[in-house]
Length: 335
Ligand code: NDP
Image (cartoon, rainbow, N blue to C red; front, side):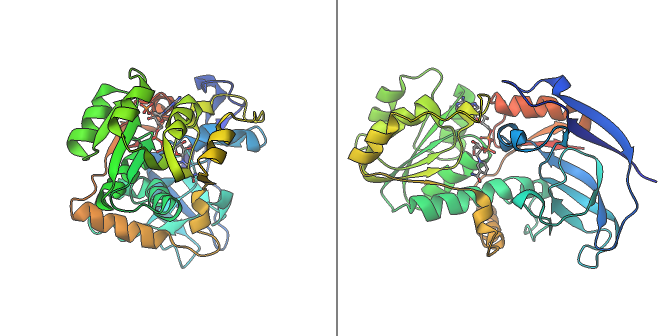
């Protein structure tokens, strides 16, 4: 019998998630049934949607999320013992995979990462990278010479979007939350300009950085920052609305009409929301994005960074740390 540990959310988060909203539960893994396999986790992801989507589930629920692990026992010939697998088993060290399409995400053998570190399968070569790739290329449809703005620019998705925009010949401006991140974006990732939204006069800084206005905006954060960026969008600008992390700690069931609507109207903006699963169902195009991103990383055109915390016991700290902006690149926990 394998003893396993998992995080259970026992009450809905109010504001910033609290440590005692979770309970670390020990239990014995059940016997496998036909089609199932069990996994020992190696890396577990912490992501903003864990804050945003919990209220949709009945309490208590097992904390969901992607992880990479090794198959230790199997009754499924497509998932043999010893192979590595990307799954959505969440915050647990051992688990039995019973449903291959749980929560609109999916379970797949670790793709060919062309020799790159396996943990990238949770970041640039996993869900966040796929989001950046298709979200930016297919919704913003960037053209060389255009000005692109990315918010949440030093995070898992944003840092990849900005580098793809550079590959496509765009001028790239990133908004982020610390001077260290500004340095990283400008000096290492090649952003033309990075702006600390916490300390800068955002309107003035953007006007200086984008004197001809903004053609494409990849929005990871929403809120006041997004309003300031919309003000400087050009006619027929394109916005990929990927995330609204600035409001995830607020009540998710109250919606307000936004003063952004007149701006969208007058500037005739095209604003499109995206959920990364649209490139999985009905047709799985994730491998296409992962292969392209791996090539760019190997060629040195994209730098993929992981922000790794050690230990299952530190998952909560890694999670709230990510929400507070401690991470540069993809926030992960190694177990
Ligand atoms: P990140 O790695 O970017 O981590 C979150 C970052 O958000 C923090 O590092 C912090 O950076 C920033 N942040 C936190 N609070 C605020 C705030 N109030 N205002 C502005 N920035 C803030 O996470 P991901 O790259 O995984 O996700 C980025 C966004 O993309 C999220 O909104 C997420 O929900 C969304 N997403 C959407 C997907 C989809 O399918 N639609 C798929 C994946 C992600 P800083 O220091 O800059 O403040």
